[in-house]
Length: 128
Image 1 (cartoon, rainbow, N blue to C red):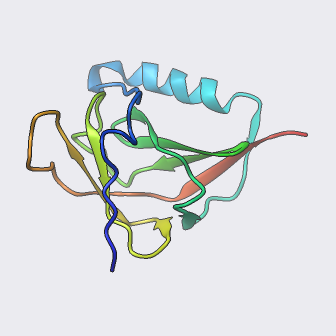
Image 2 (cartoon, rainbow, N blue to C red):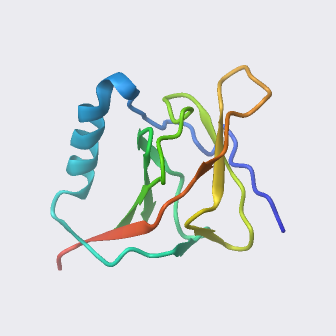
């Protein structure tokens, strides 16, 4: 089993919405997927093809891969998914999959937050 830790450099420029701004997260997601069609949810995506995740809110991550966006709805809200935090992903192989664990690290801290689990990846593609 290999572990890959996505550091602060890889996550520079992420934006997130805190719990008091849930509707803003919904608006950000709606804007991102506007004009796109949802495909069937996938259990896994290639870790080498998806970019750094954008935090939408405490239970939604957005990955970009070329012209495709992948929306990941976590199984439950993740307490540390907030602006400025680093996401630590535990990879077991070359793919990100449903139920893979993520944790967050607050700036200046050395102990990551609780484990959170990824959900399925819903692809959104632009109509041709």
